[in-house]
View 1 (cartoon, rainbow, N blue to C red):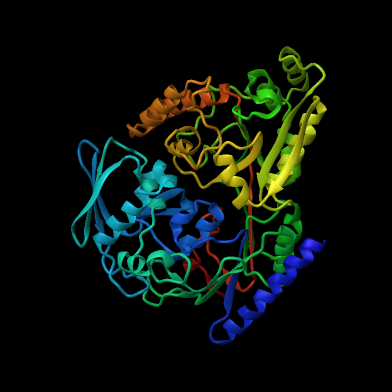
View 2: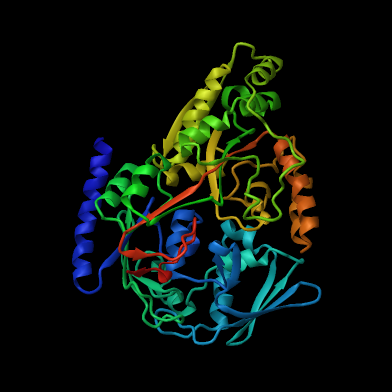
Length: 513
């Protein structure tokens, strides 16, 4: 209760400045970000909650229409592909300017992609690019080192920034407000701890946005966010706690939607963990852990039973090449779990260390971790639960400094995104390191299948490759999909958001009623 009251106090303090801001012109749309935005440079984080903010400021060659499950041309007017699928020639759309007034040029695209290529966290998006160059102010040429069918996701994820402004701001870029994007909004005030204010870019190439003033407020505590929406202090609240869905949907009247999520909540086991004499290196122990997991319990606790128990990493509703069968699943089986423990030499149970996750203690990942702890206790496996800030936890996960973790992934529209979790190039992204001197796994075949999947555009062939890939991963007993969590969205009664989406909303499509 003390934490909630503090969070509400901080929120109301920030909101006071928002009210003054609104008095200067049109009213302000207030949105929540669940964690601090560390930088105004989109390259500094791949966290989805931060990326939602980037989507208001920056744009890519492609956009994402989640309501219709597909990519669309954004800054790219036309894309031509060579016969060998190794060269992409992109013509930029006319009339686009950055928020600083400079026209978008091909050199800005080259600059932005070269920055991304130097950033290791984007290897999974850029490793296939051999060279990027411009032939004139409107034409960008991408030369690939291999055919790469999911290039659309790269064109969507890599955002374009103004070369002039980024260069002029130098080391300050990302720490202070800038107008280096082509998006509908630019930041006017920024504080890492509390959030930011945004203003509509009147020269936006699609036309001036209807909503002029936007404010993102950091509210990490879900209870505080629910209170804020109830008190009409949040205009748009997405990914709401489903334990509060009945209350929030009633409070919002007709302004709500429960959307099947393009997400995954999963459990991962670090087989390299030194805890308890490398206990998790034992395949039977890992399998015993997975057979002890009751996904129905997880669904009830996390989503009030509204979620979908998962065996896939990506929902096939959103990803056509996501395997639906042909791989091992670990259906809840207490007796099998106990038998595996006995075979492993632990008939009386064993301590496997700590279940580590991040975010609010009332959020989905923390709830899943607590259910997992209780499930393991039923079969004699002891584990502690530790929930900490994402800024502390995620570097540990990426460095394999954990025993068991609860993690999440969002917004995947091509199965190649599994590369983030299984390919050795994805340093700083994966939570299980399959390629390692101590690895007992066929990581070479895993990486061959990842590469084979992108070297063809044939959907049936890609599904075949990814089914074998996912079968190998599931046989390792290191990653267990648990739940596809539905996404609840509520919004103010005086706001029109059009067709709501689960992840990548655009404030430029909103308007006041």
